[in-house]
Length: 111
Length: 114
Image 1 (tube, rainbow over the protein chains, first blue to last red):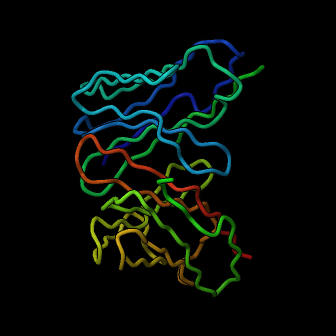
Image 2 (cartoon, chains in turn yellow, brown; image 1 turned 135 degrees about the vertical axis):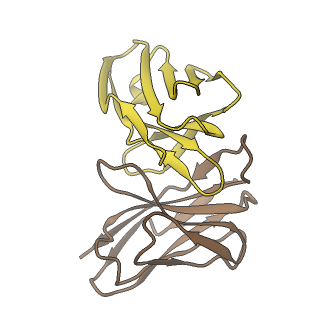
């Protein structure tokens, strides 16, 4: 069964720093990988989707990469801001019925 | 505005009661999903539906039931058989099973059993 791991579980950085969040998955047979943001008590907001044939996607200060063969993805956040503080979740889609989620990285950006 | 709405935002239930959580989407998506989120755990799939009048059990369907009578609606009933229903419930939708399709989520319903 597909397992998704996110390390670290929590991360604190000073404002302005660039940072990388990691996501790994055990089965490389995926259709796509999606990064989400979740604020406390809220739903998930989709940030980026990378198709299995792609290597990276960019949106503003966010850049996500995918290395399917090694089962890894990273989310790079440039020039972090306090408003970036949230939990970041990655999920892989294997088709049909399910999105497999990691347990997330809780990011705190300190002003 | 296109999106997914869930109601209520907070729900309190006495033990032994059934409650129904609402999920509506106006994205014209075919597939809809219900997840449960507990502290320290990833999202777990309860039920999903790929088309109207059809739905399938997910990983933790026991104690839950759903219906899909309309494309835009996918209500979840938490029955008294669910032993530990206190959790955050998230509804999601996806336009299809294609590789490029994103999954979108509603704002969630927090259910507390008193």
